[in-house]
Figure 1: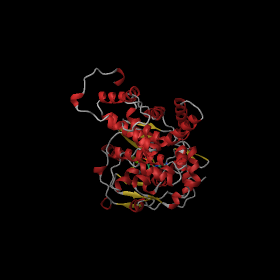
Figure 2: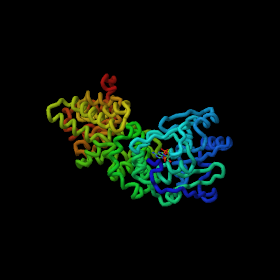
Figure 3: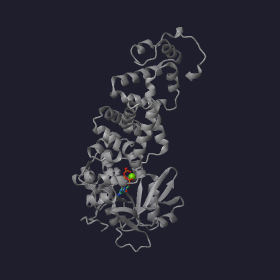
Figure 4: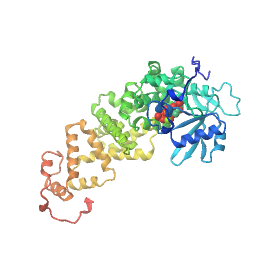
Length: 452
Ligand code: ATP
Ligand code: MG
């Protein structure tokens, strides 16, 4: 197949001089500038490229800086002591400065004029499985996914080189694929997810021609590497625009190819699940923008909860014991999900804990309450319970009860729990009963072993 995919893009270079664009070296990381200058001084061409140029034009502060050059990876390695070569499918150089890594990629060619020795490009059923043919900057531009991602900032004169009309798209806030959309998605189906992610992140629209193939080609995502889909799902959901990504994925019909169980539950009209997911993502987005840490485990626990809960309930209604039903339902849903998105074990382990603690919130006898509060995953499981409020008034009350219980001094809570019958209707009258009494009435006690 023609590597340029029969599209009719012919590079028409437009050079935007320094005084006509807003990119300033002040906003480019020192490490990236060092790499660019060093390559340039050694006689190679060196450009900042991709998302960084796009984001700088938009006035943003890119987190990662990619460099494109005509130096081969081996030549790059010779120039930098702090450099390692990585990747088989897409070979490139990483230049490391402390915690910052600058990715340096050699211009990719079309493969047609490959002489074999230098590199190779391998296409199976239209899908690019290896891409190591070096080329010119024009060819490199055409191999990128979206026009806005194919802009080059030239360190030799600080101009921006635009081969495909990317600057206009940045201004119009639109994502156009370079070339024929269907061919480009067949080459790499993950580009469909990148379209959604970038549209959500940048608040851009996806051009109609780029969105049209989603329905037909979405199933190709089943062939994408689950490890890559895991990385992509973190970028979709944990980068500060998770809620928007989720809504767009569902709207575009792509959610079902990444999270089939989630899409199924939502399709069944599980509005409580929708509310759980939307609130979970929205609070994650707030944490990200506030610079707080976020965990993939909580997020995936949120996305998959509907199916786990329904399955556990079904099995319990058929007579399976509660603990076993929850454990089996969790394992079943995780196994199915990991065929699509390879969630590492350290996260699925936490997800299963968060889920298995949910029924335990309903057991509000004294010993159990303290034991649950001491569980290392209590905080996450409790936050999860709060998100489930839309499931039923009882769950909402349960959340309120536990919220209240945690604020009480331990002795008072212990006393209140001892004085009341096991709270299967947890909360009728309880919160009133466990209002703290004046301090002077409290007796000092040795800490109880189960209350630590
Ligand atoms: P982000 O802001 O998330 O980093 P990005 O566009 O920089 O977005 P990267 O994954 O960092 O995304 O990729 C850097 C650049 O490499 C892209 O801008 C694009 O030019 C090119 N690129 C990345 N993935 C693909 C792909 N699947 N197909 C074609 N080009 C790609
Ligand atoms: Mg990037």
